[in-house]
Image 1 (cartoon, rainbow, N blue to C red):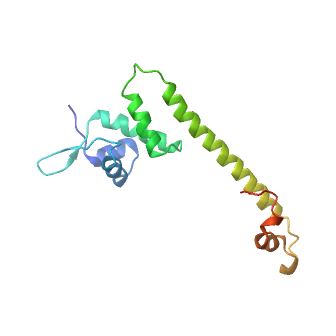
Image 2: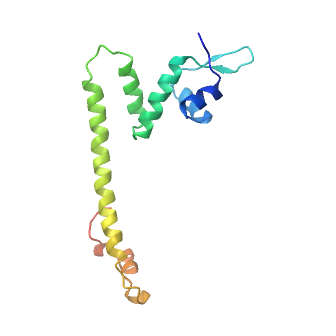
Amino acid sequence: MMSLTIGELSRQTAVKIPTIRYYEQIGLLAEAIRTEGQQRRYAPGDVRRLNFIRHARELGFEIEAIRQLLSLANHPDRSCGDAHAITKAHLDEVKDKIARLMALRDELESMVACDNGQVAECRIIEVLADHGQCLHETH
């Protein structure tokens, strides 16, 4: 069985070494086998698992959701209903965040419509001083 150093694993997965150590520490990645000199050694399965974790993080999944998805991936004969539910919950969070960002964008666009007159009449200063002048209650 081929083993990889932590540097090789990092290069193959585009995950930084401290992040690999962190994932190992929190149990997302199995603790590496150590050589007599205490160097970590990783197996090809660790490359696949770390790529899975990296991609899930790129998609914005939280650590606990990734932990659950990894657990599901270890049982390929199970229904994918749980994976669907985890992903649907994340999608709902993303949609909510997009709505809040769009409200924020609208508010900032309204604020920069200021005519660049004097600060005494500046829409930006007025809105920042009085939340009641905002277009949206939350942003």
